Image (cartoon, rainbow, N blue to C red; front, side, top):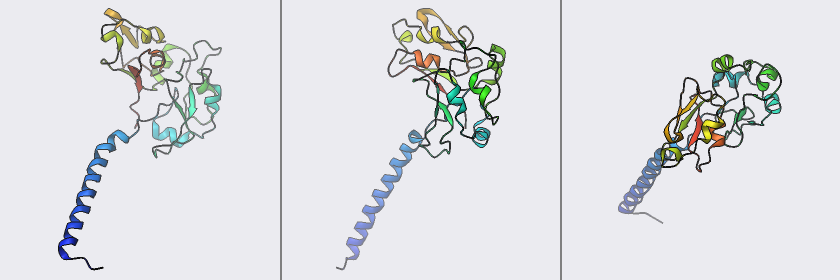
Length: 202
């Protein structure tokens, strides 16, 4: 069946508009579809070095007393499948506060050096643990919206340093001291939660 020049031009224009609209919508969805960098265990090397060094043995996940570490599912093409990650809303890093021994358990069993050995004291934790930094959504936080809560502050193992509270138990995160353990995120009574750990890893 032959197609007239006019019909051909018309069809080509329609296809062009559809493709252009698809590209525009993909461009809008692109940044939103990009997953945040994963949260890594305490003492982890920078992301590139971590991926190159971690042997996916999962000894750290087995050693974690709070079961806060889980194998990562590589859903966004980052190449980290099988490496340990954290989901604080499900389980937070307790910094082995109630465990026997001198070191954080996950760092003690890592055979490859992907996790630096971290002592269970505030100085070493502050120097070597950089899981992420807690961020508060003031629009969601009850204490900033005519309620008084304070659940996140009471859960923080570094309360008074990583987090302080003011009037109506309004929390303030201090990035220089926050190690991203996720205890605040786990304890948040708001849904969707008003505080979450974000990481600056590339």
